[in-house]
Figure 1 (cartoon, rainbow, N blue to C red):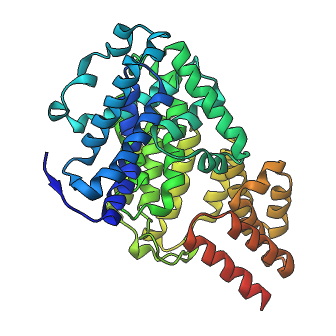
Figure 2 (cartoon, rainbow, N blue to C red):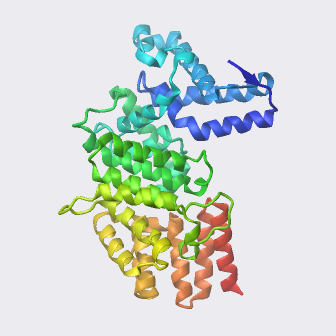
Figure 3 (cartoon, one colour):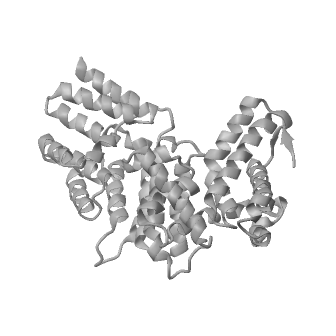
Length: 413
């Protein structure tokens, strides 16, 4: 295997890039033999540590993913052969990992890794795993987000989310849940959790969408792949539409943040808009009520239609958001609904909807940002400044933080 001699700083950059792009795929391959996600994560972490030591000295391998996979697998085998491990599991059971999981690295078809990631998503949606654990487990173990990021997305304390994830991984290991894609008949039962995880991945990675290696792009790929795999699942096609339409409005990371209404539609990707609209048509089922992702995709389609019409149909958005909170009253959807109501009806009505949200709202950045906007519309500038400052502290995107601080400064002046 060829190597390129590089500096320690460059080696660290390659390791960071590889972790961002391939972490979940590698975990999927490492966990497939035994179902032990904790072991897979531990050995992969050790492989990354070894990379940071050896790559600056020996050079970065041509195939960093394959190098990490080999090192992590070797560490797994060392553990399986250890005396401590033999007391708990037979050596034959530990090393009989079968199939392409033990094929030589040179024979490994890395193009199959995305399928492994999708398989692991369906594994983590197994009915034996508690429903409230499935999506967080997929986001961490398969898609590579840490527990703090996931906790913010779910508006729960980081410690509580960390405990949930540990329990979920042990449940998979102890129940010996098989790492195989379920039969076609069982897929619809598991599909909602898988779609939720893919959507969560996109949302968490969205600030880096303009980066070609962003997990947001991987999430869109997984959504489209899932829809094509299942063929006739309307919500799968709807999620593919939602992520594609949202991607059409992506900007380059580091650019100045602009609210949707201030963006120039001429800069949006018309090809992606057309692709997303085609996926949305495939999700339509005459006579059948739309699902959550169909409604969210339709909302994105209304926004993207401004590229054609030059105007936003706010009445349509109000109708769609009202329907969305009726079937999927998440904190995020209710905050967005309040924002639209505040614009189409009155800021006071929108603010009353926000104040009716449960206490978890305080951990949600969009809640404070929307509240700040509605307070500013009502002329309550001091309260709006405080809301924008709070929203800024909860934002992980530097461009968004800068925008929120500018809003606060404008109102303070």
